[in-house]
Length: 88
Image 1 (tube, rainbow, N blue to C red):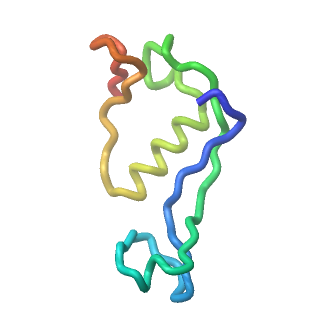
Image 2: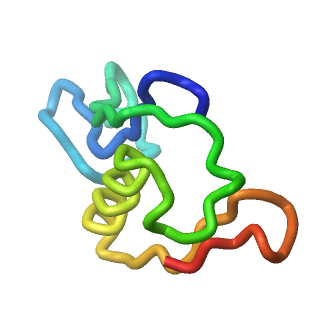
């Protein structure tokens, strides 16, 4: 990412409390503020050859994202070329 840290929003806080679900309704959006989790930044990853080559902050953010979505990340693109896909 080229910065010292980066953030991902996992929750939203408004007058009714905290929600993990985004809602487009006016009541929800009025006064809503995102709740972020911060991760260590990283430099270029285009020369990575495997998932283990990624910086720890990036690996942690992917793990947290999988937990939040109950999904599985299977590949991470590090560039436009076909061989620039890292399979997790």
